[in-house]
Image (cartoon, rainbow over all chains, first blue to last red; front, side, top):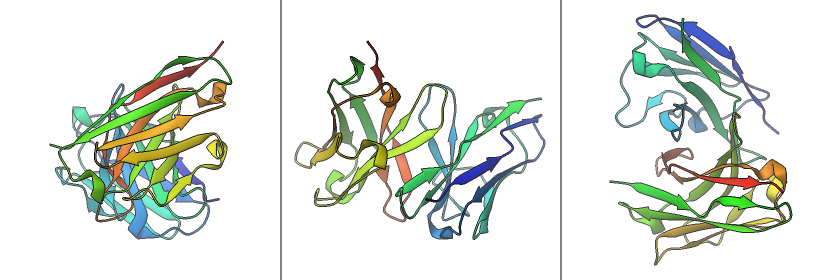
Length: 109
Length: 119
C-alpha cells in the first residue's frame, strides 16, 4: 500500500508570500498520475495539477507542481487571499487504487 | 457545463442500507470512468470505488468490499452506490467524481451528500 505523507500539516503565511507544500510517497509513484487538489470549507475538491506538473484548465500560473519518484511539491508563487484552503495530493497506482495525502492546511498568518 | 449532483444521503442506523445517486450532465457520461470519494467529518479524502465506461470493471477500497456496490446507467446518465451493512465509520460526505480523459485523476466533482450512520 502506497502512503502519501504531506508536510507541513499547517502552513501559516501572508498574501504575497510563496508557499511550498510537500507530498512524500512511501514508495515510488508514477509522475503521470500524481495530482494536487484544493478544497475550501464546505466545497468539493478542485483539481489543480495533474501529471505532477500540468495545470488543470483554468488554474492560474502562480500554481506549479514538480517532483518525481517519491517526492513531489506544490508551489504557489504569490499567495492570493482565495488560495487559503486545504491542499491534498493524490496518486493512482496499486492497492488501494487511489490514495490521498492527509492534507496541508494553508492559513492566514 | 459539466455538472454532477449527488442525492440519497441521510441518517441510517448501523447495519442499515442506503443508495446514493449521482446525476451527470454537460458531458458524454458513457465515455468516462466514474468514482465515489468520501470525506469523514473534519477528515481527509478517501477513494471508495470506481467503475469503467460500460460497467464491466469495478474497483473498491478494501474497507467497503462486499458491502458497497457501484453501478451506472448510461442511458439515464446516472451513477449509483448501494451501501449495505453500514457502520459508524462510513459516516462521511460522499462525492461523485469524473476521471478525466487525459489521465487517471478527477477533474470534476459533485457537491457531495452526507451519510450519517448512527443509532
